[in-house]
Image (cartoon, rainbow, N blue to C red; front, side, top):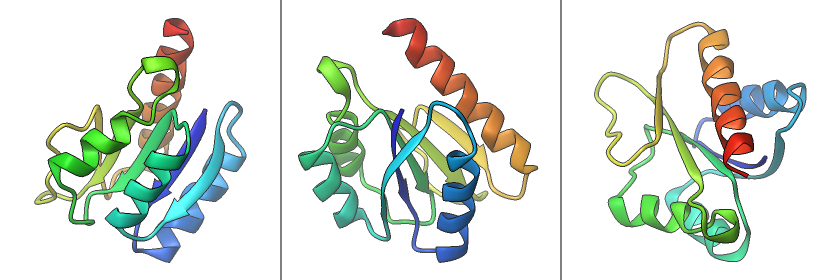
Length: 119
């Protein structure tokens, strides 16, 4: 799955890159630190999955732009890592920050499985 990570937190980005590099079926093709980076990547590449830090100031327009980056007319999947007060409207999957790392990996594995079944 062609994956983009979006977070202004470099530690989170590195941890996600490391976890997904060791997970079969995921290919992190870009990391961005701001929402305008999401718009740029989504308009120039085909993406299966966006893993987005909910602390970024997401808008509905940004989420729609990301969803349009999916392959062959299928929307990209949006997974948001959210704290209690982070906005998560229009996300396909929400994983709460502060949980066990396995919770995030389990959610991303389910996404991978779901997308394979739809292919």
